[in-house]
Picture 1: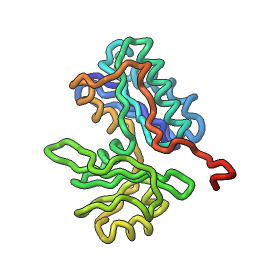
Picture 2 (picture 1 turned 30 degrees about the horizontal axis):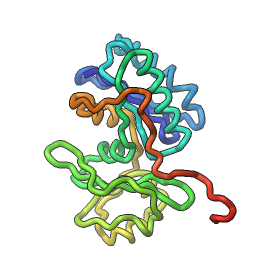
Picture 3 (picture 1 turned 120 degrees about the horizontal axis):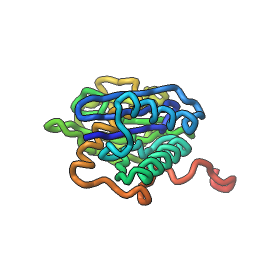
Picture 4 (picture 1 turned 180 degrees about the vertical axis):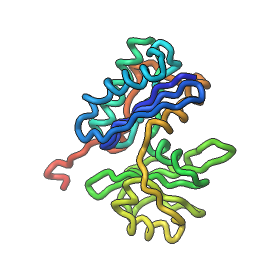
Length: 221
């Protein structure tokens, strides 16, 4: 399959193009310039592969959670590209993509959600597939879901709240990996979505925010 994938859920602009078994990547520290970079990177990566949008089987994007603005950019760009080329979309969760990049049987993916909170989810590998065993949720590090067994932790949540998460999981964290969601994992995870007919029309694709709002009213503080 030919799949274009993009992720702008964090400070990096990450893109990948899967052409059969060949993977081409582009990544750059974008800061607040994702929208300026993503289309140029799309043109570069397609040109390197020698294909056009119409040669794709689908487009995948990091659906979230993550930066609200970044998630809207990824979804909006993916929708625009897919509409013009008549393609389906696959939104891939950023926590799942993060976990997929870690070579461990059990992975807790955790992103810093700011305001003292984290985005938390847990995944297990079985027969080459990765399955969610604790759904993505927003919580305080000290309230993270309790899990059985031994785990590898990864993501910016562990970087920011390392001690709190280690304490919460009571010795079940054997290793911590400093990593972030990347488009290459999004592209790989999207293969089964498109192969099994789970791609969606561009007009129904949407980000997965998890947090419903970023600021509390004065009365709620």
